[in-house]
Each structure stands twice: as C-alpha cells, then as structure tokens.
Length: 446
Image (tube, rainbow, N blue to C red; front, side):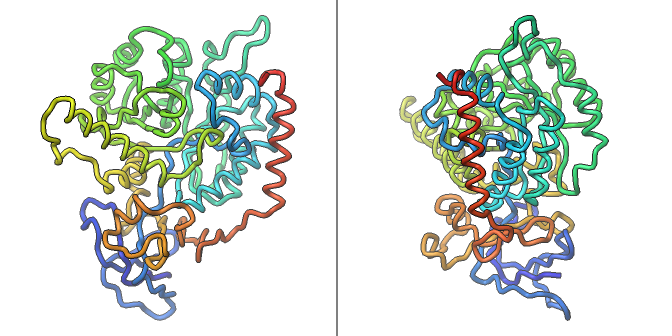
C-alpha cells in the first residue's frame, strides 16, 4: 500500500471540499481511504505536504495515430486537413506506423497528466491497423477507450464513398470479444450526421447500442449531410447518454437543446476549432443548458496535445465571450455565470468520465475509485507560491510541471520523469515513419 500524506488535495468529488489537506491511501489499483490516516506497518509513506494532488486528466478526444505528424498541419484550414490528411497521408500508414504513434502519443499524454485517453481512431483500413493501434496503447500503459472508427479515403472508380458505408459489424464483434487489456475499453467512432447518410448514421448508432458502447461522432466544421439530422435521429430514439458529439459548433439552439434533453454529451476541442475555422466553441451555450462538458486536444499535427492548454483555451475564450456579450448589451456582467478554474478542471476530469460512462471509476479521487492521480511540486519555480491550488493547476501548470502520475495504483511518472522512458530510438523512428508517409503521399499533398 502507498500513503500520500497531508497533500493539497483537489478531489473533484462533489461530496468533498474543493480543496483540502488530506491523506490518500492506495491499496492495489484502488483508493482505499481518504482523510487523516495513521500508516500501518509495511505502508510506503510519501510526504505530500508540498504536493498538489488531483485526479488524472481525461483527454476526451485525440487522434493519437497522427502523433508522428506533429506540426504538419499548423497552418491548414479544415478543408485542407480533410483532403491532405484523410485522402493522402492516412492512406500511406502501415500498421507499424499506427502502433508507434499510439505508443509514443499515449506516453506523452501520461507525461502531461492524462491518465485516461479517448483514442479516436479513424485510420484503420484493416484489422491489422486496428490491432496495432490497441497494441500501442497497451504498451504505453495508459487507461484508454479505443474508439474504433472508419477511414475516409477518396473512393476509387466504381467504389461507394465512405459516407455510404456503415461500420463493419464483424469487426465490431471481433473487438467486443477480444481481450483488449485491463486498462482498455471499446467505443465506436462513428461517421455520424456530418460525414454519412441518414441510413448509415442509423445503422451505426443501432450497432453501438446493441453492443452497449459509447458512440462518438464529429458534428462541427461543416454542414450535416442531410437536413434535420438531430431531429430525425432523436425521433428514431437513437440519441441518449451514450451518444457523444464532438465540436457541434454548427448546431442551432433548437438542435442543441434537443440533444441535451435526450441526454447526449458534448466534447469541445477549442484550440483546433478556433485554428481550423469550425466556428465558436459552444462552451457557453452548453453551460446555459446545464450540460456537462468534456474537452480534448484533437489533431496533434495542428496543435500540441496539452490538456492544460486545452483547459485554459476553453476557459478564457468563453470568459471573453461573456465579457463581450455584457458589453454589447450594456449591462453589468453576471459574475455568478463567469466560468472558473474549477469548471475547467471539471471538464478535464469528471466531464470526460461522465462522457464515457466511467464516472464510478475515474474522474475524481474517492474511496473505491481507481487509483489514477497526478501530483505537482509546490516548490516548482513556475508554480510557487501556491496560494490557490486550483488556480495554480489550471492557470500556471503544464506537462513539465506534472511531477507524479499514477495509473491503477502504479507509478508511470515519478520525480518529473516517465518510468518508461521515450528513447532517442523512438523519436528517430517517428521521424523515419513521418518521412516515408509524407513521401508516399506526396502527390496528394501537392
């Protein structure tokens, strides 16, 4: 057993104070107790009096297979991204490229304090690509939900476009029966109403429901493929708490309200949305409905997969929106509605947990829940002095300030370093992988 003693704890548990001085006792892969605890013989005691402890972050949306193309899309529009990435670069990936990107991408997520990764994998043209993606996650040691998706190549002559092809039932059945590992769950990254016909959307949502899986779809950045998409899917009874839409910037107020009333969840990736012209992140609109938001980092070729940056970007963008709205209306700002650092931390913890239906397991620190936690050193020169632990974490911290990461009771980062190091041979392999993919896809990029 391990006892973190007398830490600054931000539990994110609604039954506990927002911040408290507290001990946390880890027994195996679970939190056994919290409070004032007298250590028994054989317990490893860690002096946490100069630490901030909080639940591990949940990155609710990342295309981890793109890790080896970091920086490639820094100046791309969304249209450029769709053409160059999905019809060009993605088609050149071999299974070993996916395995490498997923392993290194997941390890860098751990380095940055993410303990649960939603790997939205839509470059799996063969079962071998899919298995390689899962192998990469497993090798990294991260907790993950593997969202099995559909590739989006340009159709060859005589082929149907991807928008008319439902997800493979046989492949979903295979994955549902497979032993993915104790830390990996399965979900479906469906095409959804933006990228498929109504018939395909219905079939994919029914498939997810049949297997009891969360279904996540991109829904912003361009119009839906068919009119009245949200109303039609809701009328079919296909929107519930296991349906997650990412972005959703293009929803009308009526569509967003209906989606909320049906129990659907929203994930925002503010930095990519602002960079690629998706429209305004709908953080405030979803807040006004009482919705529970989750956040992710999305496209690493376009921006860093840093959950602290994502928290800040989402928070400060919406604060600016609220300030501007009050100024335009010439009324005082309603400060009771102003989003706070605690709200932002909630999006990155319990928001992601609820989106996945895993709030009984992750997202907060409480007895009985998974021992997934991260810690900061209060004496870090970029963080000190710690006057408000929540503000310190949300507004000042970054991946390099994450001192400790624990997943399922096991240290995966300690004293500021990954336990399983990323070697120079790994980064060299990433470079070689990227160069080969870019060379192979050169014609499409031009």
